[in-house]
Length: 112
Length: 112
Image (tube, rainbow over all chains, first blue to last red; front, side):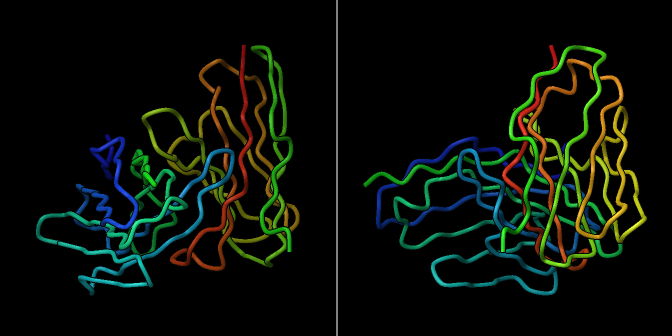
């Protein structure tokens, strides 16, 4: 059973516009969330994270929002750039556990 | 720094053959992980290690064994490969279970 879900397999956005990637989770014990970015033939690279004590974390063009009541998080990229074209994975963990639970990924294409 | 490296990058096995995947990290990280990525499934944790000489099962450990004889290396073994083990395997390391994980480039394994 997939505990972290990314229901949009793909997303296309014009350069300069906002990209919004969504992630839902089912396990209310998750208290730490991460976003990873993956280019073809490479491993995932860490992008940004958020603890459940926050509802927003910002790092440059990237902002992650967490809505605990809805068990939903989103990644906003503003402005989107062609180099942002990649697969984005959402991941979640529980304090004290060693598992990261990953979503299935969303392929973002930024059109120049 | 090379970061996390994986050997080999590609491999084709016949059913029943054995092989070992090698992961090496030069960041002096305590934690190391093996994941597999299958289409539509995201990344799933196979085994992990919280330090030299320790290993533990993850989400999908069956059919795999691991060893962490040296802090910088984490080996994943398949004793008798099966077609269901056709996948892309990623190794990762981190300095602590909540910290970001650094991933290797992956090994694409096909079992015929």
